[in-house]
Length: 71
Image 1 (cartoon, helix red, strand yellow):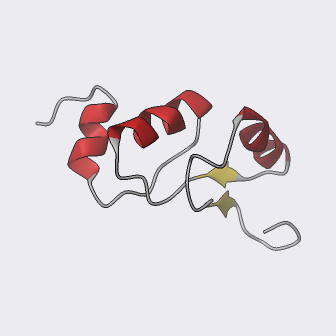
Image 2 (tube, one colour):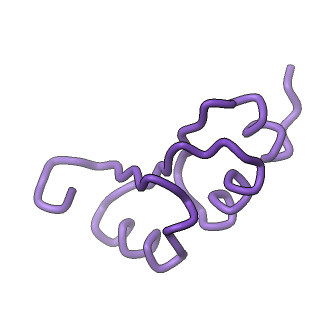
């Protein structure tokens, strides 16, 4: 995405990224939204890494994994 007008990066999974990846992406002006995170463990890891958003097939699970209450 470097050299384009992109402002978001979406790595294929959260397992392959770490804090250094997130830091470098931010230093280049990107926000990070890994995909497709479909387990609570993946959502929690993404939160711990400080990503900006996630892409999931199960938003209800993700919401609960983040400790949010559904209305």
